[in-house]
Image 1: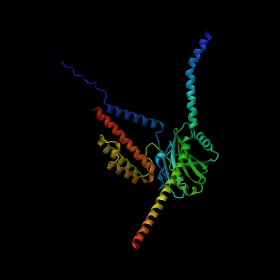
Image 2: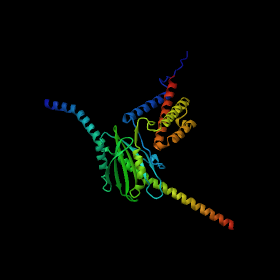
Image 3: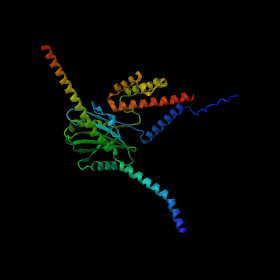
Image 4: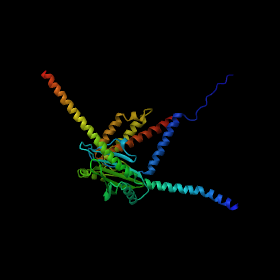
Length: 265
Length: 84
């Protein structure tokens, strides 16, 4: 009799392994994020300020906005987040020493500011440049092992023109575990939560082998984007980006879990 | 000889403890050294964004000027053609 060689069967399908790996990696990453800070930080940028190219931002900077002008140095605002174990006075001391290393800089603490997140410290840095003296206001807020910083810059000579807008943005600094919680109008809050739930229910079971990029071209996703922009225009562009990003991540997680379940059956 | 062996044993036992202590010290020093990096990143990005924004504005201005010049030239050549 002829002995037919039987190829060794892999214990687990390669694709299934890859998906499991992705699920584990994403769950560990998510857990790490939760351990670092379960809170999401956002602020409302001034109206008609444009989002800066994310590829040009420094490592700890999450987002930046600017007001393009033809007259020279344009005003900008950005949010940076840093993990830290020190207290607010120690952090301020460290910040002061960093900025005072350059003798041309003039740093000073301006006092406390009430924000949506709590009481924060306001500081000011003046630095010379080709355009004239640049004035930066930096708001520092520490909570649960993280430092949240809003930095606004404009020419010292023009700063008074933008001060009100910058002050309003600083006061809008919010930390929340639920992005929908800060929406003031209950109706809008419930409507957006419902729309998100409907989207996740409708899109997630139909995903199959489609990549997430293709799903984001789905008309239902585009409608959801428009609804977020319309119903929550007062929450600002950064909040809208965060909501869409959170929904995308939930869609991706559901897709991975669905794929693994399908393969294991 | 016995003393030497005892000293060597003690040293070999204490070496990992010392190394751990040094690692902890190094981590603490580094974390304190890094404190304030978020502020530095914030100010750096604020200035660079404002400068890039000026570049975008300048490019926009040049674009508008170029289109105005192009239109002006086009209307001039159009006028020339009609007069010819």
